[in-house]
Image (tube, rainbow, N blue to C red):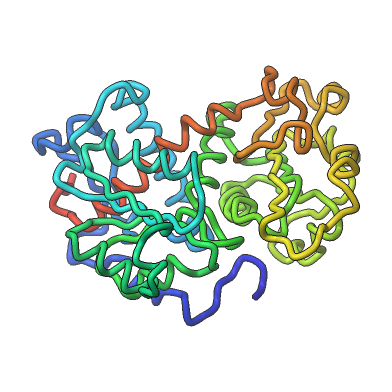
Length: 361
């Protein structure tokens, strides 16, 4: 399968992926008279900027759509008083979390995001479910949808699974990670964290370091970062960072020390041994010597470099404790921003299904 793509049979037609309606294409603004709207009063909602029923990846989003989602995330974060209060924007809606892979951050983040918007949640785990009894993935999803849910958040080990669901379900589908393909909300929260510290992505150099071959986070970051004007370097062992990545418009480098002085941001990706048939390097110790971010490498980096990691982090492998907990680290900020991004994604998808919530300005 080519890098960053899914099988054509799993891709959505434009007619299925985007909403079409008879409303004006001019900018719309949340009406302050709508009981759901006061928290976001004045936030512009251009229909040409967000008309997606599903969020399956960043590959198909425009720079304007990505920026708009980031803006919504920050507005919702403020509206909830940094997560201390709840809104009624999704009151009466139900979000189902269908996780067929283990997750801590993402699953809890989506649950909190839905609840902070006033939605109910259905939590699904494949262990102990009817899937273990032989029920198909599609039948399971349809059964959950029949409980009257408005959106399904799905994580699965198979690339393209959310795209497949979007073809069979009537509700919205949000990709929470499909194998090594994409993880759009992780990419968005990473980008939001960078934007908060640097103001703009344009002209920044961002290095993704580690297991690029198996990383859905890397793919989503690449699509989003390039569209917002950043330069992207992918770095790691040659067994995990093929020259084929250059086809996506990124620079490939196998020596971290050669690029340190150029980087504004380092995003340190976990080695995903669970997705590898064989060990891609002789030892974890060797990987640490060549690619771990440590005190010595920090001292040779830019003074304001940002250190990021999507988690879970392996201390002593991708980075040392003094770096993970040091002044350059924004790892916990990424976690906080994840809830804001997921609130925005859920609200935008479900708002797109209810254009009456917006009034022509």
